[in-house]
Image (cartoon, rainbow, N blue to C red):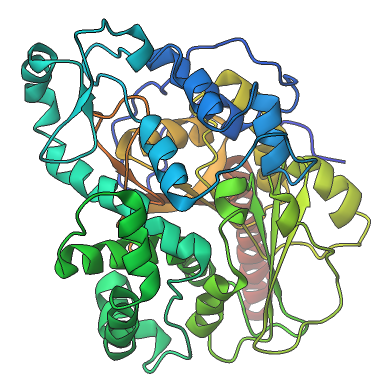
Length: 474
């Protein structure tokens, strides 16, 4: 069974890490949901939170997808029975409907349906990302929009270019690393190591029929080659950020990847983001990060794991040099009791949570608490990522309150370089996937107890040695 919560003590921030100013966590205003409180979904909360900023936006999105409810949307995404009318007749229709979901005034939040006949939403000509219902709203919004306009220009290109990853037209460069893995400490050295192979890959994609068809379907002029090349590089870092961040955790926490039978990593709280667009080849890069490894087993666990990703898991030894991906739909503490404690699944060498979001909602925190306590009390090496410094501070405060022993935190050298726009609040500063990390191992209380026991043992040995020496010399 999952371990019970320890009696918590009030503690200061760990002295082994640089202190940060802890700000109160961002609270998502509650909205009516039809989901069970015991199984909150960060995907669902994100979808419905659109209503907080732009009333009617979630319904507009469903309308463009020819759906009536979030439950229908979730059914299709989970691989269930198809919904009548879902889908698009051609790429042009798909891109048009996708763009329609961004059509609301960035200043007054008006949707097209709420405008008078004399008004029409027009795009910002600089970023091609936000809309305004008139010059007055655009002028009033400019002091805020000017801070993010250039970054949002990148967002507008990236969300279209991502289609090449979805269709498989953009295949990431892969293969053994031509230099020592210890040298690759971040994206600068990774790009330098891969530059010849990467240049050939990017040139092939830029000249491909898929690229031409993409921009013909979008219905707007194709950007310059340097703009498209920059977008492809950002998308590449976004796809590889998770496996390389996982590798960062293996390195920093001293996990032995040369263990007979292979090493096991559990990705907890996994959602569609980690599984829907993930290709097994993306995690090959993790294997190349540890040449000579004897097998790496990565198991995605979460209530929003894509149905297509769910595969059977096995405790049988892996072939040396292979990376095996599988998924399990459910809550992690249930998975632990049903699969790990019964010996059906190997105990993890490392647990990783990409953007768990427990700082953002009481419901999410309630759902995450059993897992956090389990990881703490079983002393499982754990790595968590967050989007921003504010999230880092809020998450650290929660983990300190739970008496976890935080071993390190900071900026992630393998953070995604693709800016992420807040869908319903377009002028909010974009964030980056896996921007910061937190690592913890066990409980600070356990650490103190262990130190006290060691001090008692050391003291006893000292007195034993003293009397032994005194007896010899008396």
